[in-house]
Image (cartoon, helix red, strand yellow):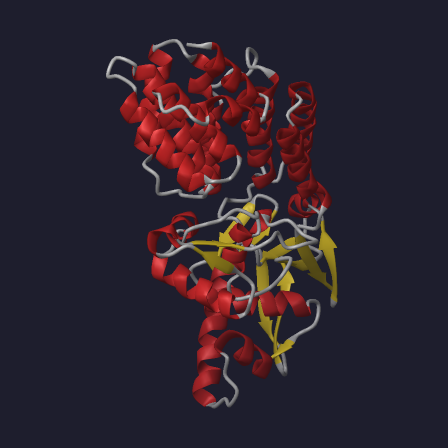
Length: 406
């Protein structure tokens, strides 16, 4: 490897893509193509970066297996940053195995981190934690240690373990400072803001106030009966009853909880649950049926009793009933949650992360675009959607990962 390639590699490792391009921009040999691809990725030109890396893979000889694998890992990272979750994960796993066989433990660990980050985005936290536990960060240089701690913090945040998340972010900050890479320092600072901004709203006794993640964790650990509108579940400490597949029952539970300790009239419940403006006896009969179903679903946690004008809810063991709501209510809040990270997403990646159909996501995106809340660029398969991060709150509770209190 010549001196220019070595210097360009060092520039990229230090977060200086322009310095790397000054050395290899006019070269078309395989190592230069790979370095140019990484530099373009750091500058945000992902389309050009992927093309250069694929050219580098073809240019490397069949015996340069490890080098080709490093290019695959670089392309996988570009796919992750550009939120292309449909990128074949098996290629990354194969590249990681190749690097491990050739003794390149550092890049193999980086590939493992990419696998973990992809799983976290898709809400598969158990698998992510299992893979991450196989990585020993002790021999890593500072930049890699910072990346490792950021992944740990991301999982802890989604698990609502705020103490673990804060400790991981502190370690990531120290490692990023030692690495002296401004972009990495900025990434850690941005991640740290999650713990300092409201993550949800608490509705109780007719009042509403924002909650930080730490306060959400404390609430879910308390003895309060929580109607969780972020996950469409009803919970009290470790007991969780999911109503995610029963939207009518959840809307009834939320309406009753918002009115606690008072009652909710039948007309209000009919409007909330069924959208009925003009009601007749058939609507009232259906309401009685759905209330009966809700009683059976929540019988271990709550009582639902009929009153003169409607219905009221009370806890079996809880002294307080509250509603945990999203920072911003809306029909397409889950889609906005992913787009609020400031990255560009394809509709297929959003569908994969949300666990729904691409057509459903596309209708939501079209609706949000009409309202001016999202914007797109590109065409056909290259079309991407994004929006600036919404100020004032974090989106953790909107993501499809289970909020479990261990």
